[in-house]
Image (tube, rainbow, N blue to C red; front, side):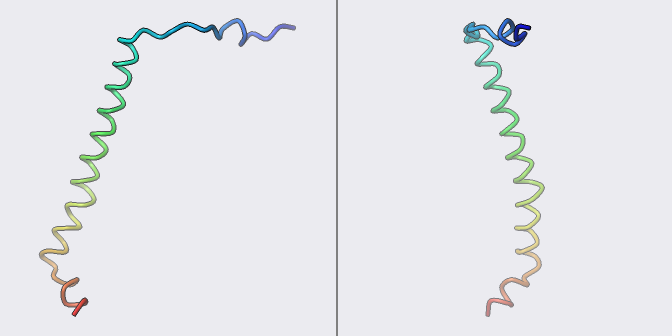
Length: 60
């Protein structure tokens, strides 16, 4: 019995346009995750530290 995967997998080069589109999509996903992290995690924490003032009183 022959291996069907050897018939499917061939050594073809992917077009450069397709590679660029995939990389652009990956970069857009990374940018979206960074922006979400900034506004949903870091920004509320910073606002809480500034207006809460608890961290300054605890350090002294």
